[in-house]
Image (cartoon, rainbow, N blue to C red; front, top):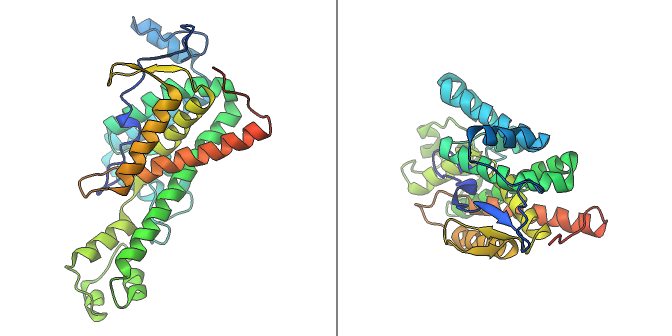
Length: 295
């Protein structure tokens, strides 16, 4: 999930994981009953054909949207304007953006790592949950990530605006994408103040990416398959899924708290996707909709 122009929401890009997931019996989990064969192009195509419908279509939609933005520059601006997520009091906000933002990405690398993670873990989770329930879970986690990120923006806007003697007037002007400098001067605000730029950026920097939903899928994998070993690229040692998820969540929390100007990742959106996913899984477990842990 990226915050276009200001922050880069790295999504699952930091997940340098999972050449394969494997339980203690040596049973490959990705694909549940079949290993992933990258030995040939035909083997890769076979894996795509075997991919469950929801995961396959989610990846396809994200790729098509990215291609449209990359190949048709005039369309890119329109997609970002109406599909990326803006702060809810911005004059650019549309309620549908709470869903559509997760199908928009800020670049190929951003798209690739999100879709790679969705492929690695989504295939398994869709086969366990079933298509309709998996889709509900995926969208819910993405929506949860958006709501948490909007909440973080609300706290930041309140904090910045409270510095001014007339915060209501300042925020009312800055929530509009077009602001006349004379209007700011008229209420005693210097438009060159860094805080003014920060506030304007919070209102008009769109959030994009599937990372919140993907982190929810990662949480579900760790919740339902806690003892499955993930073989990472770095560090090159096997690690249990539940340990990986806990470590990753802890890193996201620390990076979110100690967020620097150079850090362009919306860490709390990741945590929001995981939090909403956990609540859904706990509810399903109590209602005996799902079992687990499976291993």
